[in-house]
Every structure is written in C-alpha cells, then in structure tokens.
Length: 232
Image (cartoon, rainbow, N blue to C red; front, side):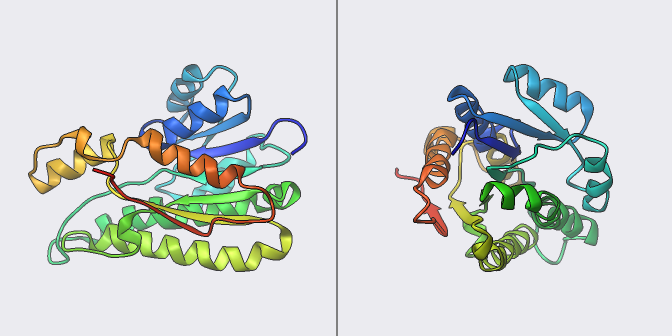
C-alpha cells in the first residue's frame, strides 16, 4: 500500500490490543488509539510516541457519532481493529438488564457504530475490519450468557459486513482467541473463584501475530474466521 498504513485500534491499553498497537507502531505504521476519555488518551499516546488518539465512550454508542464529529479523523483507514471488550459473568437467573446492556453496548453495538462511522475511510483505502471475538462467540457456557450473546452478535455483524462490503474491496476478519493472559482474564478467574496462572493461557503476543498475519495477507485472499487456542 502506498505510504504508511493507518490503523484505528480499540482496546490498545492492555492485552491483545496493546501488543497489536505496539507492533504496528514499531514497524512504522500510523496508529490511532481509541480511548474512553482525554486522560486515558494522553496515557496511551505517551506509551507510543507519535500515536494519534480518538476519544469516545464505547459504553454509550449513541454518543460516538457526536464525539467523532468533533475530532479530526484520518482521510483513509487501512484497518479498523475492534479489540476492546468487557466481561461480566453470571447465571441468567442473576444477570440484570444493566449487565446485559453494558456488555452488548461495548462488545457489539459500539463496534457496529464505529464501523459505520469509519466505513467511508475504509472504502477509500480498501481496508480491513478485524473483530477480535472470543471462543464464546462460537459456544456459550454456563455463566457466560450475556458475554457470549454479545460475541455471537459480533460474529453476525462481521459475517453480514463481509458480504455487504466485499464489492467495495473491504476485507472482514473475525479472530476467536481462546483464553488469553490479560487483565480481563484475571478478572474472569476472580469471578469464577479460581486461581489465575497467566502461563496456562495464550500470550497476547501470539494472538497479535495472527492478527498481523491476517492484515498482511496479499490482497487476493481474506481470512474470514480464525480460531486461536492455547497450545499447552
């Protein structure tokens, strides 16, 4: 692609998102890091000198359009990487609408809205949208109803978007990592009442490698769905 590629990344503060952002930044690409507020944006930009930021609250998708209209967006977006996510476990008998709506907003509606708002730039660049989904987007287990529903929905969003934008040259990829060593995983273990041993789970760097592979694939091919499981 001509010149530097520009990547918009959500969830760049930790785990998989931080690994992806760092590696794209290190290779000289332009990274635009999404943050929920100005303070967080400053922290993220300090970690990767020269990075740009985009501020908006994913838990309130209805306000994203307004938020983005007051900021300068890149003219072209070579990739939009949806890596941010929230998880809150609980049986259906205990889950409240608030818990459902928070996970659906951040994990599903916000990615749909951010995609809608950046589609013109993605079409110009014939770019790629990557949704970091979850094993829960393919199979939901006890305690995972709300999170799993948000991630099953994310798969539907990706599948529909892929068909809609194929003619515009926009590629769409879903990545389904198994459990990954990250702050989110520590929280899950806490909610499950289990001891957390990061060595048992996938290193975020390994998931980042698969995401970069999908991004760097020659234009004659597209990774649709990619499942990444712990290797030990």
